[in-house]
Amino acid sequence: MTPMTMPGEYRRASVDFDAYLDELRADTLIDSRNVVYTMTQGVFQTFRRRLNVADALRFADVLPPVLRAIFVADWNPDEVKRSFRDRAAMTREVQSLRGDHNFSPNTAIADVAAAIWKHVDEAAFSRVLKTLPDGAEEFWRP
Image 1 (cartoon, rainbow, N blue to C red):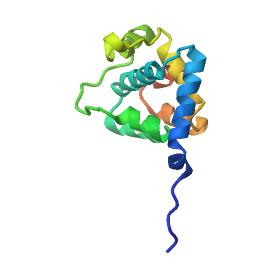
Image 2: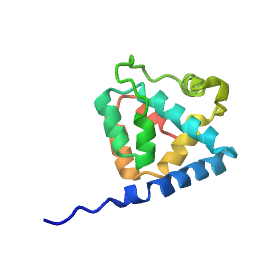
Image 3: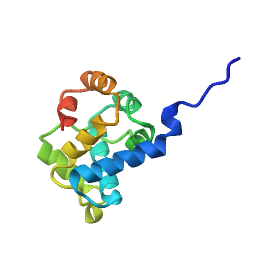
C-alpha cells in the first residue's frame, strides 16, 4: 500500500492565506489584517446565505483551505435562505458583521472577489459559479 501524501495546498495553507490577506490589504490600501479578515468573513457569510447546503459546500471545495474554513465557520445551515439583491444592499449586509468593528468599504464585495480570483483555480471556480443560483456569478464579479 502506498502511503498517502499530504496535499500541497494543506502544507502551505498558512502561507497562502497570509499572501491573500497581504494582497487584499495592498489592493484596498487597508492597513489592518483584522479589517480585511472581517471583510472577507462578511462577504463569505453574505454569499453563503444565498445558497443551499449542497451548493455552499461545492463552492467551498474550490476555495483554498483557510478561506474554505472561514467560509463554513459559524454557519447555521437552518438560517433562512436569502435571495441575491443589488450589490449595495448586500454590501450593507457585509458591513453589518460586527458592525461597531467592521470597517469594510462600500467596495468590499468587489475587493474580496478580485482577491479571491487570484487565489483559486479560475477554471474550477468559474465552473462552480455557473452551477449556482442566478446572481452568484455576478456576486463574484470584481
